[in-house]
Length: 253
Ligand code: ATP
Ligand code: MG
Image (cartoon, rainbow, N blue to C red; front, side, top):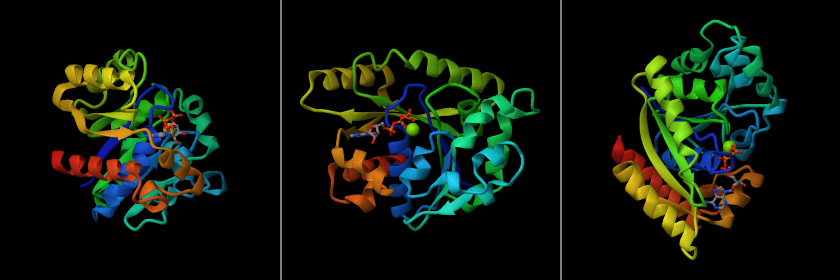
């Protein structure tokens, strides 16, 4: 049975998608069967893996609305062992269209159940909000990985996220755990990065990954080539750090 991990934060641009794609790719290179489920209408995980979701007949949108099974939304990627359940713009309508629909918070969980035994890891990339799509991601997951960008007031936004995780634990998914907190876009030249890292270490203790993802321009270039970093530039510091993260995630399991 695959472990389901959602990558979540209501803050935009903190490295959720970069982490979902590249952790997924590194786990796949460690011979794990990995599915990335893109539940963000921006579809950055889909396009970052070289797939255009808007050309796709079946996406996570049709799946959430109950018009298709998740298998129909899954495509292989350029990397062996790595598949993606694609998103597209249509998904932006789902939050509204699912209002008043039965069991709307558990739709993703039920959908993933159909393919879970085919994967070792299912990584869910969620949008920068705490709306119904993120609630579906958290409800479907065994654990949540929280990327924390090394910037001013990084910890401030976490209260809201932890609150949402509690709500989901209390009402929908009592087994939900925090998989780990990941420092992203770390710049060792900046005092600020070091301060955020220090604060996060105090606050999260052993829930903070030892691995820190540095700011690395190769990581930001890779998505426009539709490739994970391990294919785009396997020797970059970005690739090395996501490989290290994958080893740490495997250690935890
Ligand atoms: P959103 O909330 O919009 O979904 P996100 O949390 O998924 O954003 P990403 O898309 O992963 O964040 O990253 C935001 C931007 O920062 C992207 O352009 C990405 O390429 C870039 N980026 C992410 N991580 C790094 C890094 N370690 N070094 C340099 N650039 C990075
Ligand atoms: Mg994203």
